[in-house]
Amino acid sequence: MLTRLGILVLQLFSLLPLRILYLLSDFLYVVLYHGVKYRRAVVDENLAKAFPNKSETERKIIARKYYRYLCDLILESVKMISISKAEAMERFKFVNPELLEEYFSKNKSVIAAAGHYGNWEMASNIGLVTDKKILVVYKPLSDPQFEHFLKKVRSRFNAKLIRMKTSFRDILSHRKECTVSIIVSDQTPVPGDSVCFTTFLNQKTAVFLGIEKLAKAYDYPVLFCDVKVVKRGYYTCEFVPLVDEPKLASDLEITEAHVRHLEKKIYEQPEYWIWSHKRWKHHFNN
Image (cartoon, rainbow, N blue to C red):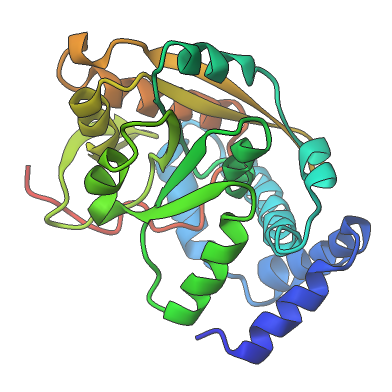
């Protein structure tokens, strides 16, 4: 549980310039990777299953790169607490925001699929390049105080957080205005969720059908937030159209489109995906 003192400490750390936070990140890497070996077994198992044709040495190189980036991501997330609009726009650039305006000019809202890839937290910064409402679908945390704190951080730039279980109703309530609904596509479902099964990273994987169901129900085009790491602390995000006419799409076409796009990115630069996440911890009967 995150205490008020802990939140205060995070807020104070966020005031430090990123060049200082990256020095802390270098130290944190030594602690997590070499010291406490944070979830090393999970990372090693996930990489072995996703890359069976790579040698153990090659997978260890990916793992080390991943832990270095994970530490950067943690400190960048802390910086998000107080980062200015100017610095946020400089460090996370949207390369084609005009694509959103094309949809808005046709009175169309869009769904933006994203993955736990690169600094996905900054995807909610879309509010810096459009005046339309940004709806961020999220899963509630077990710690209500920490959840309240994160909601305040994530909603700083014109974003509104809505719970996954009420997302249909909440998105419907904004039908009279143009919106961007951001949905992280690679979260871990639990039994009872609406899912389909596909092969993702060489493993049988349950995938949420939420993006597809929302897109078809409301006829919202689906884009992918294609995040690229330019260099340490700098990113670009390109909106990649996946399905423009959802109601004409065949069953699972939308789901396969965003799953395959994310998978391709991970295979190209695997160190930027969240390998310490227990993505395959649940087993379903299908």
